[in-house]
Length: 313
Image 1 (cartoon, rainbow, N blue to C red):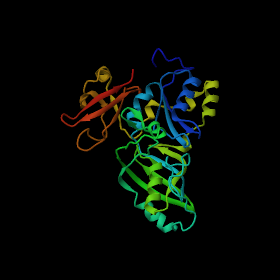
Image 2: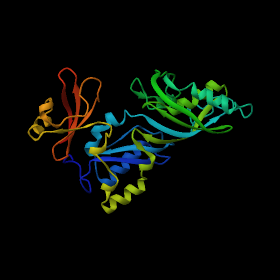
Image 3: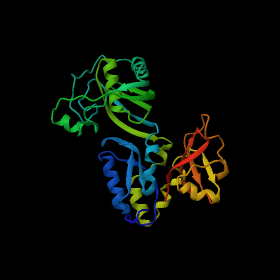
Image 4: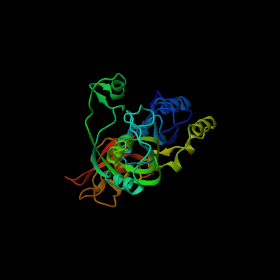
């Protein structure tokens, strides 16, 4: 930990929080920071204030892993209300189209429209979003009734499925790439169906390998902190990237790894199961002979070495 951090006990790891409705992701970070008396806290994968579910909160050196954690696919479940669109694309906004209460599409038509929104898409972010336009947040411009446009973003929707349909409510499940706005999916579904729609409820059920079953409430964090049992809740640094193969660095090469110097086969006590080049893994976890995580490395196809780039101190 940095000398400026003064936790109740040494902590570097990941909290999987079940975010409640009514607070921002930043609010969660601030609360964790106060509870644990730690400055170095961050979150990955922002959730809208009204949304609930999996929010990854990193402590200490775990914040350095966010470029990889935040790049993982996300999974959600929720409700879409058919019949009218809103200016925010969710239930917090004002109606943006006349309400339609009869003649709503059948389940088969809804299912087919959802299927048409799967795959790689150019998605327009909602006007009420944290995207920046000329250095200002889009939602601030929208509230000020300013005219602006947001560039579409390329996203991938792996699955957008109908779980239940009780008109006007569509219960859905979705798996998508990071950066996908589920609010925009709801809005686009309404446009495809010709009846308007908006997102009514949203719950994130997974972020990469971390699912809702492992998530804990903020009250649980508060209780664990008061009892000095935070270690029971933290995912340790070693386990943050379970899909990255482990490589054991030979004792005499540990200093080399700490300096970020390339590692060749002779420097490894236990080489990776797959060669660094030739289409193998793009990321490796480096361990010293005692099993302590040293950091991360990338393969260098040009010379079959591993290049340490994130070194834990």
